[in-house]
Length: 286
Image 1 (cartoon, rainbow, N blue to C red):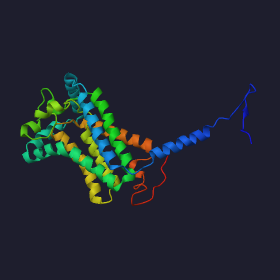
Image 2 (image 1 turned 180 degrees about the vertical axis):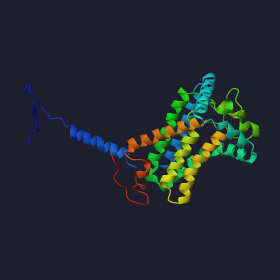
Image 3 (image 1 turned 90 degrees about the vertical axis):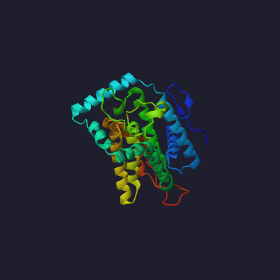
Image 4 (image 1 turned 135 degrees about the vertical axis):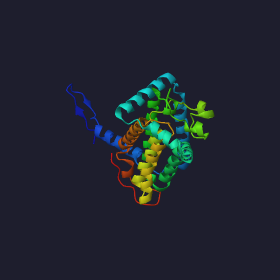
């Protein structure tokens, strides 16, 4: 049987278009690309290392616009006063008066930001491989959009404000707790306070644990972690609370990206993937 043809208005014969077949092939390709798959350990280690190195390189390469950063800090401080929510200075002084507590917060600020985030990634990799890629994408998208904020809105942290009475708790108590204080200040952009990735990352950790953990105590800790982080970033005068709001907006963007790409939020994806022990892979929405 010969090939089916169609006749045009000019009388020429040509093969009929095949948009349906091409569309289905494209959908199948996207479906395979988006489907949860078992993460590869060394690839993930390399990806996280390279991604964080790139993030740090770009963040620290943003021009340190000190004058503009200080003006922005003054504006935020005035705005918070107008809202009746300028409580950072009171919290900073109150906590600083309790030496053991503020020293603990300094080390909290310096370490848990990385330790807990990596710990949650390892937990996802081990126990929720089907949800790992989508949750990791949300974290990466959150961090990427934060770079836009650092570039277009340089902001000094409260402890660096001109004429302010905020206490730089790292300098006062001589602890290792901030890349923007002491001998480490030349290794990091001091005016990249908006948005706060301490909040963006801690809230990512907290929501992930709350959504996926089965133990009630773990879910409670998941909610307490970003709450404690908010207290720490304010008490150590590293951020305004509006910086935390910026971090939340970035995280919202990150989860939206994961939702659009995978057709579902990470917690709604299957826990296991073929080749791992556990439930069978369920169909994924397109």
